[in-house]
Length: 272
Image (cartoon, rainbow, N blue to C red; front, top):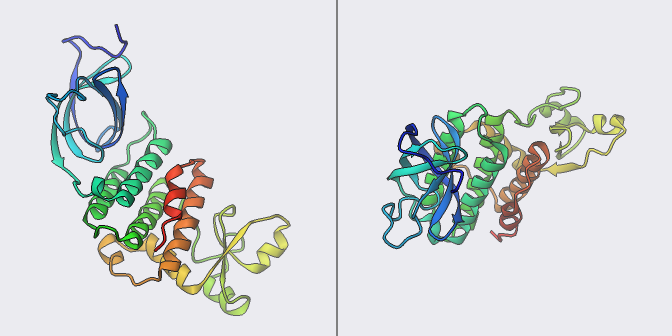
């Protein structure tokens, strides 16, 4: 007898959640991993969901927003009912959209865990990003990578790893001051947690592995952390800046959360 099986007396509960990942289990079942509004990460078994005549139909597909009834199990809960609240139907039709949503899902699953404080803002971010990605024009790699930048910045802000953008992270100098007096470009150190001035680099005595940002790069980065999605959509920015900031945010997330995600590398190779 599998340890996750429940009896009829097991308590049940409801959850509204976004499906992030699924795994095959046995001949006809699958394990579903989700992020819910109230409970955060949920891992549950959908019995018989891989059968042709499953009662779940296509309700438990990746990235669907679903209303579930679950029975509490010993190790894994059991999905007993599921209804689709929102289906992002365009995501599976575009490979790059699918990869980006996979990337988002991987980051959430690798950095969040069962039992930690649930972030309603994080749930909202996942939903908003999936909705935005779903509505993008098919084949628009630039818009997809731009959406990836938006997710990365807002994710860092929500989990408390927001980089210092407008002041030197070591001495606190205003970026306007040291940019105009010491250097033409802006220096950013992932290890140091944000922007850094040349004087502090020279006096630090350690390798801070700086990235050089142009004024446009920096403005785009600043907009990512401060603008809402409806305003962010209309930002005009070069594809060079999008690619550069995408790489920076990906490396920043991996360094500060110790979260290695394969999809980062794939989206890095998209030619826009």
